Amino acid sequence: MEFYRILSAALLSLLFLTCNASNSKLFREYIGAESNSMKLSDVPINSKVEFHFILAFAIDYTNDNHPSPTNGKFNVFWETNHLGPGQIGSFKGSNSNVKIAVSLGGDSVGSGKAFFAPKSKTSWVQNGVSSLTYMINKYHIDGIDIDYEHFKASPEMFAECIGQLITILKKSGTISFASIAPYEEINSHYLALWRKYGHVIDYVNFQFYAYDKLSVSHFISNFKKQASNYEGGQLLASFESGGGGGLKPANGFFEACNELKDQGKLGGIFIWCAEESKNKGFQYEKKSQDLLAA
Image 1 (tube, rainbow, N blue to C red):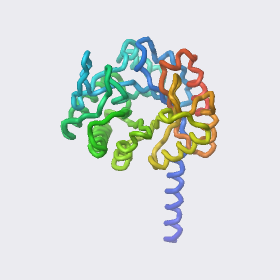
Image 2: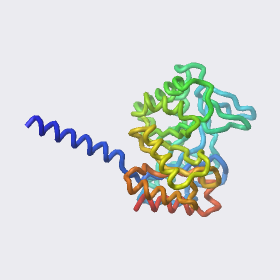
Image 3: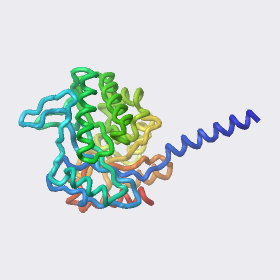
Image 4: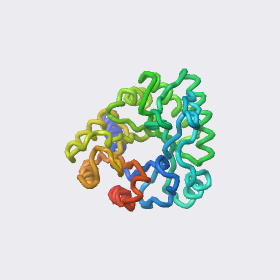
């Protein structure tokens, strides 16, 4: 009897792991970085998916003519003309499947690069928790996305600062989810974070469009490589709607996604970004959500 009890427990554990690695109906889109005229309501939303808008960006730099690092004191850098507290709160109230995240860092600030540059772990985390808690509550935000791409700190320092920030914000109930947005050239920092704090990270927004042009087969092989790197994580497929590399919708992106979905490995889709999709009539947002919802 003890043998069968242990066997049953093992099978249930295997089933749980299999379910966790299965397909997802999660669609995510970055918004707010490139236009002050974009509205949440401009983007078509399929009621059958979980939809995350990701505000780009909040950065721990001064928001002035000569931005400088603030050691974890985050300021709003996304365009707030139509993405302010009132608009976000109202939109969420009428769209129950929509959640809002804010992305931290990004590639640039002003005319320079946005560096992760903490003075110390303790002070950066304390400042980050305080400034983000205020911002998250004010703007009706549900989660954070980590998108630092330039570093003046070691992978170990990055892992501790970001890992502790996420942990504290989750424990306080300030956020309900967290994601990371790595790409190949900066994997060393993000894998250091993943190895120690992967248990508090819900989604991996891997920037597959940071690769050079990919074929369907190369996209799938790179997806599986990153799934192995971020083992156990919910990995999303991605493309850039206005340029970039990787695999474009016109060149087989949805073919690749369908193949991954058939294998039970598609953790969702995200797009950079809404502003670049607007002049295309958001056709790929619609197609992405239809694929996920089917």
